[in-house]
Image (tube, rainbow, N blue to C red; front, side):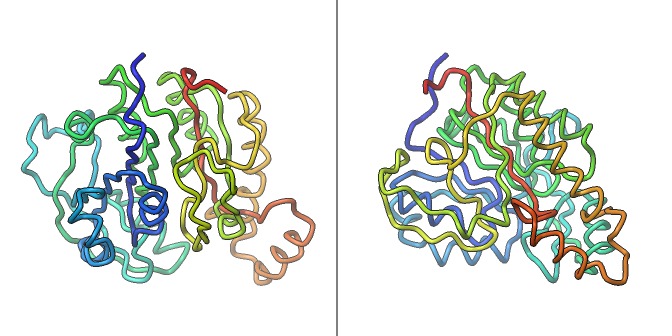
Length: 289
C-alpha cells in the first residue's frame, strides 16, 4: 500500500484552531474543515500568514454522509447546521445531537444553512493525510466511510469516540479494523492540558507547546500510552462506559441532587477523570514500530 503524504494533516473540526495551531508550529501542512461561519472567520484572522503561504487551507462547510444521503454527486448543496449559542464547538448537522445538548447541558441552537462538503472529493483533491483528526459532532464516521473509496490510508487517525452506546463504539472500532487499523489508544480529553510534548518528538519540530482545554493533544508516534489491540481497547472502553452509565450524558445519577458532590468524591480515587470524554487513536497496520 502506498503511504500517505507525510507532511499533511487534516484537522476535521477546526473549532477555534486549537489543534491547527499545534500542527502548523510543528511544520505540517494542514487542511482544516469547519462548518461554523463565525469560527471560520476567527481562524482566517488567526492563521492569516499560514493561509497566505499555502501551509493552511480552510474548507468551509459541513461534512455529511453522501453515501447515505439523496444528494448523489450534487456538490452545490446547503445543509441545516445547528449552531450552538453557548458552546460553538458543539455545532452539528445532527438534530438529535442538538436536542441532547439542550436537554443535558441546557444549551440552545440556531439553525443556519452551510455548504455540504463531500469528504471523498476532498481526499481526492488534496491527498490522503499522514494524520486524520476528526471531531465533528455526529459525522465522524462519514469521514471513515469515505476512506473506503481509496487504497491509501492515513498512518494515524483519531476521532471522538461514541459515549452513549457501547454497540456503536464497537462499530467504530470494527470500521477502523476494516480500514486496516489494528492498534489503538483511548485518550481522556480531560487530561489533554496536562500532556507534555516530548523533547525528542517524532512528529515534526519540538515547539514546547502548551495544550489548551478542548484541544486534541499529542498524536501519532508521540502519544504517551502503549498501543492496544482491538480486544484490549474494548476491555478499556468497557471500564470507561461504566463511568458513562453512572455519570455520563444519560447517566443514572445525572439527575441526583448531589450529582456534583458524588462525582467529586469518586474522582478523588479515579485513575483518570470520570466520566470524561475520549478520543480513539488508531495506527494503521502498514506503519512499522
